[in-house]
Length: 339
Image (cartoon, rainbow, N blue to C red; front, side):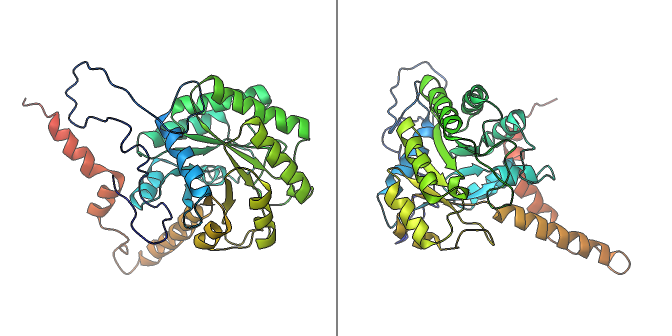
């Protein structure tokens, strides 16, 4: 497995946590054999290699001011595979990005089955752990438990559950509300129980309670950790002072959203790592690139109609390579039949 040798490891390469503990046999001939597997930092009843990898990344980055786990938020199999090819250490299927792929705002439109299908599609395309946005759990605490169980069985390594009122909305837009403490804690307990009783999955607990007060957000974050969440995300921390306070006051790895033009002061990944953040996500990059590039491509194509051939973006061979035809053709030859 590749390792990152830069002086400031943003963990842009594949995680090598299990390099010496999992006896993978790359030349497996299909014969029966006995084997033993050791995973680090497990919590669920049934261990998960990718939950182990993801949780270990977060824990190691929490205690290392020179390291942070950075993820660009993707929305489908292709965008996720391109993120892996770019060297990101894990995949984050975020609600904003997934909603955008359906032409919808991040306002509670998508549900359990929509997201489960995207997870299954993405699992087939990447080898990295996948964190998935589970929004509010799509209903009651019982729905939340089903969501966490279903996402784990679909192949997700992690799930984010938040304390907004349903239907939720993007944390940097107007009109959001949070549920009361009792409902928020019941929702998180259901998520943790689903993990503990079933397939291991990393629980990313999100609170939007800064709309109430900083003290309320910290109270909820601490309680989420007490219940059993693995990592905390306090949405829309406004500035360095609030960020430093969250790192100081939350006894667990903490993630930050780096959202262009949002409510949070924009800092480099290096600055966030030095501050103590374990993870940073970039929720708008894929969506913004998609909107801007498609608008430009469509405009250029229309402008070319009367005077030239379509302007090149990528040649056909490059597009085929990007969508996976080269790998398909290589594997297809293995199963060719002489008619």
